[in-house]
Image 1 (cartoon, rainbow, N blue to C red):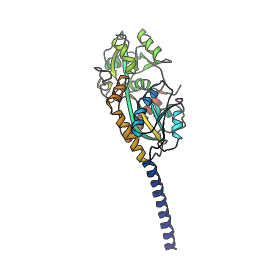
Image 2: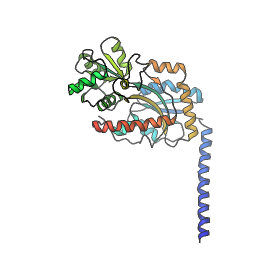
Image 3: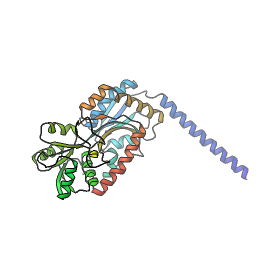
Length: 325
């Protein structure tokens, strides 16, 4: 009986191993033939930041892979579900930024950012800039913290999109500094900046592209940038981390993802192509002129960032009681 059971189990193991080898061989064959048809990049609405990134890199990717790369604009709330349910063959990709992997922490989503996607590469990043109304008697981050601790509830800060990088930058600032400044919510950056310049609110975290023209004209004063170190996007402005809050960092990134279980050879191919595109001087320049820096990297680097961000901001979102509007 023992010998018979042993033989049966051995046959089962051999069959399972053969099946695994067979599936791996099919995946490898498909990867070696990749790509042999047009590739679709799914992103959000036309004219937005994600669309700009997708359309900037898609012609370059097409040239390197020798296949058309089509940008497919969809509603922001649907892109994750569309790509997560697509075939894991490398012909449907997602280019998205902002808080894509934080969305499940703000509202119920039909996808899991870790389980349902294969990371390909980071693409670009942009920090926020802490700006204040010039009339506010502060010169640096430490002054803001001291003012807030001496006057609970002041200064107020302006914010627009709930759960966006600038909003989370303010909430992480509050949490790490141990202060209680109140959010004044606006329907867009334009009204928020107008209120900041008029003195209705005192400070705001905003993108360099929106902040720096107003800083240069003297209508706002820039105190710090939210990247880990000072950024060439805002020269001469120190990082928050070097100005009183060590370890502070918040950046908005754009990334490329694919459906889960994408064969590793295809992941490697796509990553190498994206990195090659992003290292082109003309591509770097276009991103820089639009207010961001390219940050090509490995799939592992992107996966680690996703997990770290979900852990860090998950606590901020929970403690502040933030939910999608």
